[in-house]
Image 1 (cartoon, one colour):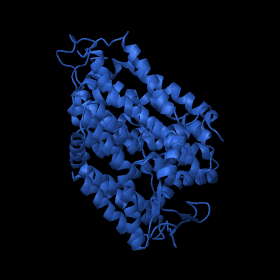
Image 2 (image 1 turned 45 degrees about the vertical axis):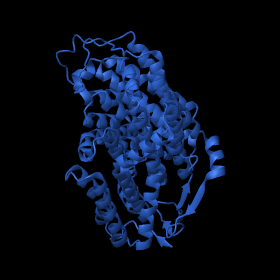
Image 3 (image 1 turned 180 degrees about the vertical axis):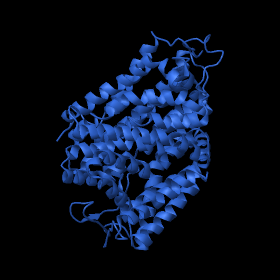
Image 4 (image 1 turned 90 degrees about the vertical axis):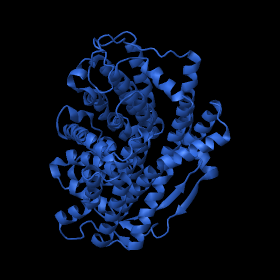
Length: 550
């Protein structure tokens, strides 16, 4: 049994600097030295192992085992999801169905700003709610690139859009996990997050269009942005507060898509922006408000069918009872060698010494990726593929994603190594020692957790207990700060390596992950700071304090 040490150098500053090394190495390699993502992730992993073993005295075999455990999780379920989403995309693309789907959405409005709003925000939120784990970025990034958006814009804008829905992604998984690790009431946590994020569900669509075409371009379509954002934010608030976390994103996304589509039938901007560059050109003034698409109703329905099949199956796979039934006949649990029950989390990170489990759950049948795979096979048969053709497409997809899968595995290996070594907790404690400013910096802790792990669920598992303990010590609402971890975390989603790799893969812009990171980094930290400001107001300032659940 090895007990985690959070100040190995007996100096908070030195220990914090040492803990930050893996993150700095990986981000610097990506953003400033233009090193390919899979190599940068491996560099970060090597530095994490070195810090854990040499600096934090973690036994070498345990450290290596934790990295292998993380790599396994990176490949399954996360890599399994991405592989099958891209497989479905390739199937539809080769038959020309994806082109019809894309143009049917584009036909709702000829304005690129409104296409962006419909696809990246509203449509993407539906896939976040149904599946999460990179699915929305993969789908919307591919759609935007097909509409003519530049690879950087398609990648970056998909990442910015995939923020406000993240806390309720995959049928509420992050909130469910947060309740499990903190012992707080799940419905209270759902409600508290639902009193923070609707503000940003209104802000993010404006921010998204502003990032694309500037303030003037955004201002010209503000009524449509308001409709799309409000039609998402209002159901998000009511469902999260009066039902629970499960159907928040799905309900809000459907509301946003329907309301925005209906609104665009009766309203159009004075100038139609047809250029995917985000700038007006000479053809804009004569451009029609709607493009039409020239396809028959049957052709459009055929193009939408694979994605409707995907939506139904992913929703089915997300139902707890269905998932439990599938697990009952298929799940394989592996106690990870040289790691399971060999590490002890210590106070103040845990209220009392707590032994850390490491059980790899190979839920091969109930995994979201398996649902996507089944949807892909059904759709392939409906599109007329033969089995040999499907196998050829799948092999091509594997070759296409080989470096992306290496990157995801290395990134999750890094995250799990820092988690089991206590390195991430050292960073968390640095935030927790900010006293009266803790509501702000505690929110940024959630942002850091998602940036490190690539998952709001993982960040909640990582720091949820610390948020609760710190809040109780400072006399703050533990529900508020636990919720803040999840709400702040959603803004870190756009800069984690996993999401960036998914974006570069979906847009076929391999090797440019550093450029994508630089594009979205300011948006990420600025929005996270705004969430922190809102949480601070809720902690201390009337009437915001009336929204806080004790």
